[in-house]
Image (cartoon, rainbow, N blue to C red; front, side):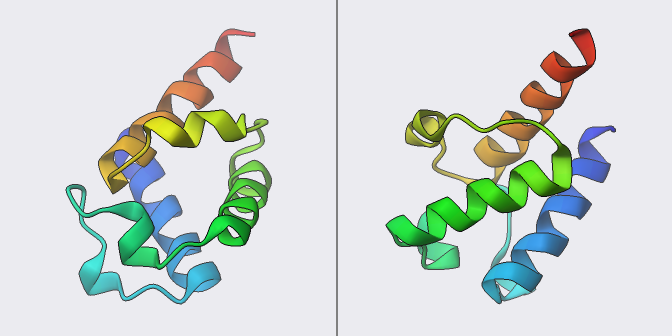
Length: 85
């Protein structure tokens, strides 16, 4: 899966799951404020990622994710590691 597919897949489930406004989703936008995430929403986000991409998410990893681009890069990294195993 290339980065373009990751972005399309990620945006699709974020829009559906969190009722996000597609116009507000941009690589440089803040993930938490754009999606209006609270701590329970992060748990939902972890479950959605695991179901859509098939890898286990380490909740501590979200501490370094601020923007949508950070999030896309995180998913790409995890998918690449999954392929190497």
